[in-house]
Amino acid sequence: MTGGGQRLHVPVLTHDVVRLLNPRPGNLFVDGTVGLGGHAEAILEAEPEVRVVGIDRDEAALERARRRLDRFGDRAVLVHGTYGNLDRLLDQHDVGPIDGLLFDLGVSSLQLDDNARGFSFRADGPLDMRMDRSCGVTAAEWLTLVSPEELERVLREYGEERYARGIARAVVRERIARPIETTAQLRDVVHRAVPRAYFTQRIDPATRTFQAIRIALNEELAQLSLGLRRGFARLSKGGTLAVISFHSLEDRMVKSYFRNLAAACICPPDLPVCACGKRVEAEILTPKPIVPTEDEVAANPRARSAKLRACRKAIEFGR
Ligand SMILES: C[S@@+](CC[C@H](N)C(=O)[O-])C[C@H]1O[C@@H](n2cnc3c(N)ncnc32)[C@H](O)[C@@H]1O
Image (cartoon, rainbow, N blue to C red; front, side, top):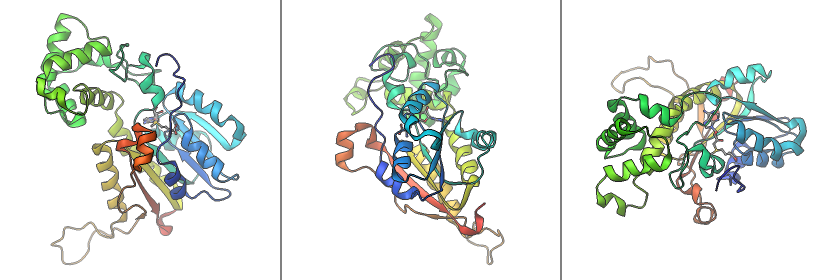
């Protein structure tokens, strides 16, 4: 689909998100990745006396969310920016402690389905991949600047791509011949760089490369690390932090952050007495991540790899 993309992004695990955030009259929530406003809408519908501040770095998504949430009047406030900057953005809008925070990571259908955004190799388009088109370099520009070693690292770490070295070398060969400016061109470079056997996999051989470059370009893991820390710090006593992730790197980061919050002690195991002074900062609400049912995946294939984790801030740590 081109242009504005008429299909609506279907929010994933919405029922569980609302159940875990548990909206009560007077609550204030932040949706750090408001996207097209699906989760925010569900939260606002669940309880008539809650407010939601929605943040997104994508102006086009915010415009859609604005239209969708318009009927809630001043109960919904939309803010352009990155959730890694959440504390500054909330300060600017005079928002104090919050009762719950949601991050629904990754890209939206709006972004994926719009060929002009360059996130997908399924149709040809300019190789952009910036979630925020008002700043930063495009993927095409990044590919002219990145060293072969750095590109290989990005493909290996963020794409878990086993042919990272071969693909990085192929990209460098291609860019010497001509700049890599379109999604189809990058897809073809990857296709030529990997063995034939790779084509028999469930996913297209270019999938991991596109994912890796998108993560690097948008600094998604650095954003998540900042968002978790700054978001948790903003929660009031008993407030809930919920995160939906779509790949193992993100999920690992969320899981280990939650584990650390829930730990009573982080001393080395051989220390006879506790010296760290750590206290339990949060209770984990999802000992195992919540994943979509088969029915949800059948209705919304994007939900396939979703994992939802949530924790609740301990009373003694609240603001
Ligand atoms: C999966 S979509 C969210 C969909 C949303 N929950 C809904 O129901 O429509 C992820 C959104 O997060 C935004 N995003 C990703 N990283 C971000 C960041 N660091 N700061 C702010 N927004 C971000 C993307 O632009 C995208 O619109």
